[in-house]
Length: 262
Image (spheres, rainbow, N blue to C red):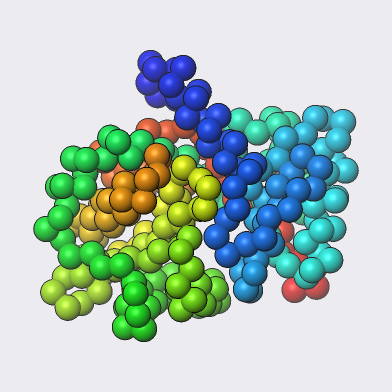
């Protein structure tokens, strides 16, 4: 943690870890497998291991059990590893078991109470919540231009059409043109809003649209009574988030298991 208020930082991280253990992820069914928390998709996405805590003598068996749980329902999944998880070499153990380790991301957190200036600074940029088919089409158009692989969008579209309260999508515009998009998860019973999938068309980068999307989600978090915003940030977005007041609390690693036979 890059700040002196270590006690406050430790309390925030402990609350975040508690939420990883105990709170449902919108669009998923949560189950406990030993000391690992598994989330099974309700409609076609990959699964997730949001939390795990194991000793050296039990981790190999735990990995086999978790793989077996997802293999039984024929579901690929991501095991999200934080660098403060146990055992300390969990990422290496998963890699040895056949997981694909993707690029490290910084866990960035901002208390909603500290987001006031950010929210006010970016009210001049038009950002709309996705509420209808036109909004979904604009969201998809931007997302596909930035990330051309279509399959990951299918479950998001279904959730948006079902008006799932836990998932909200946003589109930023220049005039009538959709130029950036993002989404947020508002978990029932949780205190941390997850900010995901910020994407801006190449020709419109560096002009504040990403930050405006962060501000829009911060305003919604405040209105809904949430306490913190959190992001798994790649190196491209970390400087923008730091300027907006976010601080790094940990490093995360997406560790992916592809279903056998695919």
